[in-house]
Length: 449
Image (cartoon, rainbow, N blue to C red; front, side, top):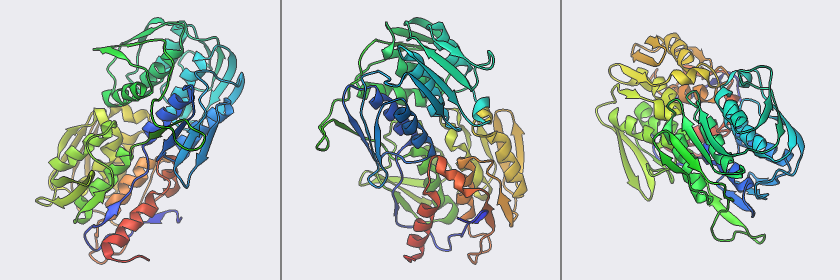
């Protein structure tokens, strides 16, 4: 793949269909829950990306066998009923936040063992403090470079005792999800009281997945009660080796890019097996695009995006509950009539990069008027400046979002006018993104080569 990668604009309206990979958020949660089951579980339509392969590799290092078949999109997990066979392990999670938090809670819940976890420099700055404080309050022996609760960590496992605990998961809902999923392994029931608001959709996803794997979480506002209970996925046997099968939904965040494509290039596009009926909170992004003028309909249990009503116009929306999609809207805002205001995104300053500052910087380089606030961006369209190599900051969502903008036929003759630096960073969650985008472009142009 070229680096920087020029994006070839669409010279004809979008048409055809696109099949998206499985959800990263669901794949990593299901991998953990399957590892805690008492029988094998096979994930189907599993996502194969850096983040999910880090998670699967860590489970293998811990002695929980994960057999992967990328061509078939399956991962077979030989559950250990809540046990970790390896009593010592070195786990490197790179910059995978879900793996970092989920594995920290899992290892802390083990009855014995010494586990060391580390990541890249950016992972060492990502929020972990609230989770580590809660696990320590439940009896975990977790040691790190200081009291701030950042990587690297050493966990000298002795189990979790259960009981009541407070948790500040305001910086990342993954900390609450991690604690909830590990809680059934404790010596007694755990009641978690939140001390700060969290992004509810991802927590709801976790609770629903736990229910599907046999554990019910009792909830009232700000309080979660989890019983001591074994995990077990009820379902039909799959394959000669038996066990259960768990189908992973298509990734709703990945869907956001292709839902936005008709706003950039016109036409319609079918997203196979993607609808608003989803475990994933990011599915709500479709309604933001509808507000911007995109028509949406359901056909054969799939979204059909487009045509666009009135050319598309700017919107005002709070993205706190599904902030992974805000860059998609920010990137295409230059093509919408009138200003676009995005709020509820302050926490994204501490993700793979500072996404708020990065978005403002790249949009300004593209000639846009941008007002940056701690928790918001206001983007007023101005004529686009061609010849920009968009910086991705090693962040997959920058690469994919601005690639969709690059599909706009700025020169009216199909000449590339925008390029993406480090396009390979998409491997974190969607390794085949640019291949899929090219397939859609060829479908739209009526070519196969």
